[in-house]
Amino acid sequence: MIPFSILDLSPIAEGSTAAQSFRNTLDLAQHAERWGYNRYWLAEHHGMPGIASAATAVLIGLVAGGTQTIRVGAGGIMLPNHSPLVVAEQFGTLESLYPGRIDLGLGRAPGSDPATARALRRNLMSDADEFPQDVVELMDLMSDAPRGRIRAVPGTGLKVPVWILGSSLFGAQVAAMLGLPYAFASHFAPAQMMEAIELYRRNFKPSAQLARPYVMLGFNVFAADTDEEAQVRATSAQQAFVNLRSGRPTKLPPPRPGYLDQVGPAERALLANVLSCAAIGSLDTVRQGLRDFIDRTAADELMITSQMFDHPARLRSYEIAAQAHGQLASQA
Image (cartoon, rainbow, N blue to C red; front, side, top):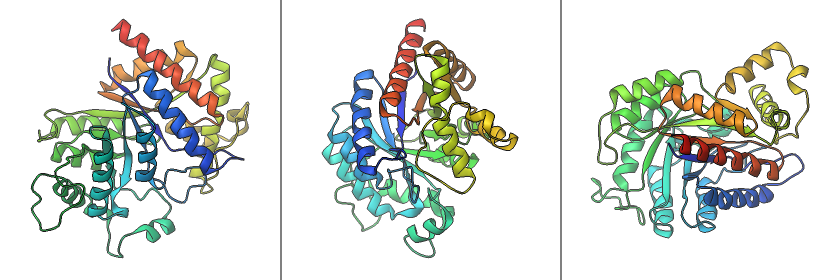
């Protein structure tokens, strides 16, 4: 059975704070380690009222320091926002502190709105089109013998595993060209998922890091003890998606029973698209949804995300997903 992992945005719920979100993140990571999840990734977003993981490397250090065996990493670092040298130093530091447990996923989006993106740029000429060159520079800085005079200290020689993230065909092309594992953001942008997977696998070139293609896919799970409860719990994420796509991002709102009956056809169509890679329901429903998704995509790994308002409910959702994984593994 393929591994299951977790993507966490450290959600800030209405009435809560970033400090509480960080406590929840560490608690979830510790539970995830006991439940057998493979890795725990955090994502870089900026200027989002409901997302606390902006200083991603700092938060990775918190999670890695509070766990023992689970891999911890970035899903991802938005490379156009940073100097490759700074990223090499940050992840070289993390790898030195927690050897053999750190992953570095890289994306080319800013992870923010246009105004915030301009404020984040390391210089006025920074361009997302430079992403492939920046990836190569970063990997060179972490290699045993960097080509240039600059050294990342720590960083050089540590060879932190690098992943390429994407929600379009561009990332698939970069990952295939460089021979790197590929993580597709099907949990919120599934439209080109199958095309991107096929392109990546068809064009993959083996590298020193990876001999064969490796695809990890994002997948939403909203699990509870009953299908009815799960449907209600999922409305927090549904509201957050609609708010974000409407240009008014908010903290994660509380559940609203009957929410889908209260929105218009445009909002329902948006949610049907955004959450097409999702399982919402009890253990049996979630297990079937996971099996169908794995059979359809032949994914090598799933990155599970579960945005829920109440922390105990979110823990329960991930616990049910882990139970479904165990059942699928025994059936296999």
